[in-house]
Every structure is written in structure tokens, then in C-alpha cells.
Length: 203
Image (cartoon, rainbow, N blue to C red; front, side):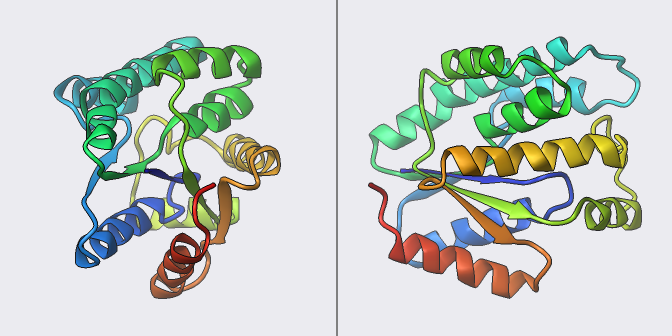
């Protein structure tokens, strides 16, 4: 089973993904946790390029680099783990490219979908948790935490487009994508995620 966590920057999705992986381990479920971009030597090197503030980058370049890192992670880690019966928990997956490079950067949505499907060998998550917070809250969090990588320094208009993109994806894939209110306490958010996982079997 492939379970993905999505959200705009500073939404808290990484925290929730890690807590969920810990929950699975405590429940004696075989699982692995990976992040994007990264999770492999190749992917981590690409991550350094993608997030470096000094690199000027066209949207097409950004998308193809994300796709390259995702292709490596999918084939090197995710697919072998799924074949061994593991639950794979990922901090971002292909929905991120649709939201960020498609809706956020304005790349053609159908092209992003086609290349993304090719990159992940048509692998689709079984369950996705979209941790949703207002853009203003996300920007406040980034400022307080002094986060300033190449994507995090984008303005509110960009993140608003990304957030609306995620909500559109949820409309299109309501049975898979669960929108979670990320403005609450960490424990409340995690409790809801666990409840959904336990009570909504994958069809």
C-alpha cells in the first residue's frame, strides 16, 4: 500500500507523515518512510539543486528534475518495498508536481500528468492525506522558522494557486485524497489521519 502526504510548504505534512509512519511501526506494520525529492543518493543530489536559492530555473526544468528524482525513488525504493508487502509512506509524490508545477507554475496540466505517470511507472497512491492550511498561516510559519529555500521564498499568490490546485485534485479524486484541517493541534490532526486509515479500507 502506498500512502502519500501532501500540502503546501509549512503545512505540517512532514511532521504528520513521520508520526504516521511511527504509528504503523508501533502497530507492527511493515513500513518505510521516504521523502521527495530525495530518498535515494540520486534524489538527494537532485534535491540540493532544486532547493538551492542561487539557481535560476525555468518551470520546465524544475518539473523535469522533480520527475527524475521521483522516477529513481519509485524504481529503487518504492516498487521493491511494495512488492515485499511493505506500506510505503511518502512525504510528497506525483500530486505535488500537478499542484506546484501544473497549477502553481502554469505548466500544461495534461503534459504534467503524462510525464508524471511515465516517471512513476503509472503507480498511483492508494490513499493521500492533504494537510490543508491557509496560505497566510503557511507564510507566517515559514517566516518564524526562517525557511528560505528556492521554493519557500515564493509569494502568497504562488502558494494560493498551489493550494487551489490541491483542492481541485481532491475534487477529481475524492475517494483517494482526504483533506485534513492542518490548523489544529498536531495530535488532533494525527488522530484524524489514523482514524481514516483504520476505518476507510482502500478499494
